[in-house]
Length: 299
Image (tube, rainbow, N blue to C red; front, side, top):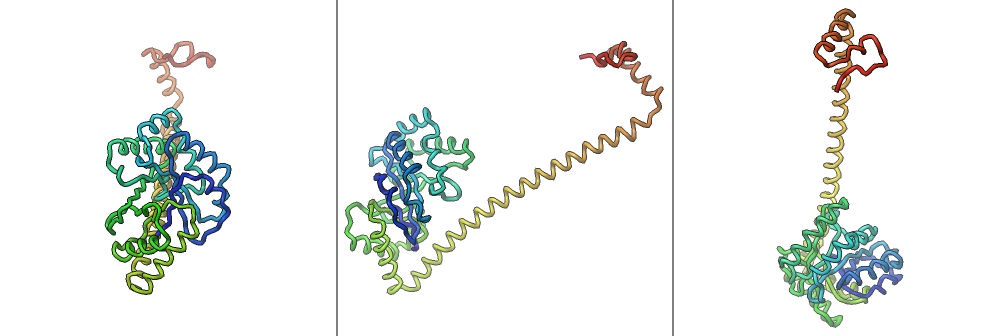
């Protein structure tokens, strides 16, 4: 599909399904507090047979309209700091730009509570080796092409309404390479209706459909190339550090060679005279001149 289906739900039973899907599906679980997050974590780690299909990823959805208190969750996470992090280690946790995704309602975007929450989450995840989190926003209003916020269908739409609504945003909003959210458990049915809308656009507006499809493909390719570029940069930095170490070894060898070539060739009487000068200046003990078992230099 041109866009990725996102199923928004609080029903952890979805994890026990054994369905397979040809299309990529992203499941965003509604979390209302730390208790529900713990229950969800247990289900994800021990039940998730739905992930066997390989095309299913999941993330966490926090929405103030669902009575989520960001400050309360933040306070609880400070006491149990890895409660969110442990979920992101799952191989099927959804990532964008190699950052774990946490989904939010667009109405919370820019609020002081959410800004503080994201700032603290970035610190927590950076301490675990991530580059922070990737906040993903969903809105009930169809967003224009220039916005990267994602559309979420209103609740209780019929199959026909879903198809028509999706067709409308494809045609009039040039909606591509984004996520399309819906609160439903009927994944196969929703995929079917979304594909109907795309097929209709292909029949009625074939050029526009091909442009949207191409943009979606190029967007995915761009993310992959960006990831490969980051790996190449990291590898280059490692090579630079390796060369610095080698150069450091060369410097140590130069010092050893200098010692052998410049100091070792000096006559023995000259070296002994230097030892006597050190005794006179108090830098070396007198006894060390004739007893090798005595400490040579004073602190």
